[in-house]
Length: 253
Image 1 (cartoon, one colour):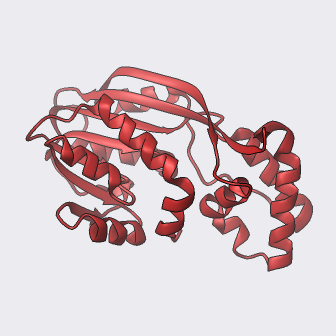
Image 2 (cartoon, helix red, strand yellow):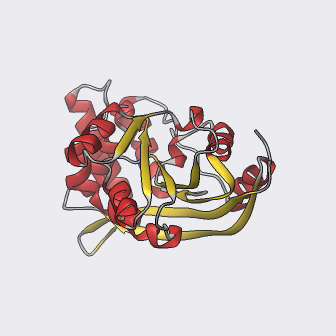
């Protein structure tokens, strides 16, 4: 998936704002070495560094890494797949916001985070949880099938709290806290819903000609209007999973 980083900033900057707020839960300390997993445009990596930590940002998107390196040239950004992290015992903490639901190889990502941490190191992460954007996906899937004759395939991994906690514990972590909560999120402007769809589900739309593509988006809006539009504003029916975990002893390599 190719990312239009400027469009991401313009239309979905609320994701960065939420990530910066999550840094308070991470509570970076001076001289800690912290891995920002799924750093995107680098804004949250910069926030971590401003707290005095030595931050390293990684992302699987060349576009995101290029954007982050241009905006924050004094920080360390690297291209890396979350399921194939190359680090060994280097970090005091791993931070991740709005990234791990993109990683369908979830156990490999957890093992990589474990390897990357020093003994006793911590993970603070937030991702889409079970039933995240359920109404939005249902409306889009129905429209895609009805208008274009295509089957919708969810590209994300949205685990339940118990499922993800069990994966962490099976791979050398102690789960210190976990939350699964609703977070209905307003989308920018009158085209907020279609902007969200074109940003985050482009593979389902890319093969359609312009007329069919427009018809799918319009049908999605019509189907979702009752459940996802209030007072003239589109909302995404986010349900988030937030976890705090600690590397337990030598654990799993």
